[in-house]
Length: 199
Image (cartoon, rainbow, N blue to C red; front, side):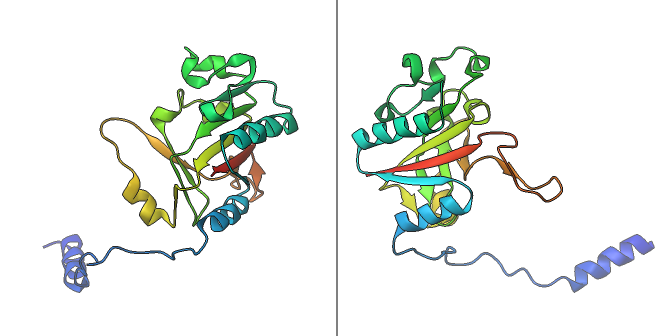
């Protein structure tokens, strides 16, 4: 037996016993007020958070956000939020994703939100074109108030793929601190992200 095999054999003998999987699923902290915690988490990751009571208020809030951002081109995948500018219904109606160039604000539905970290789960089939995330200057995510989970353990338990597809968690605007450890917002995607909680 060579020295390599001797070392590997010694490591195998010294390995601790396998503890096995936990018998009970891991649970995080349940929050008394999910909406309050979600709002704090969204703001902590650089996003904005706004509660609206119903679809009419959502439409007004999205219009106000577009005006504040001076958004000339808006696309929406949320019918309750209103159509985008020039009657654009959303990214799905665009044949070529390159036509999304110049989108100032994209309004996208979120299936549910995570109170723990402010992340919103967006299913691929709800997007139209995936490019809308990285092309839009600003992003608005719309989540029903009844669809908030405590933590990522609960979130992963809800995610289902019946076939090929994709989805992603979005938490705040695009950001990076890789360059000289300086936080840069909008480095490779949306410069702002607003989460609208409806209901």
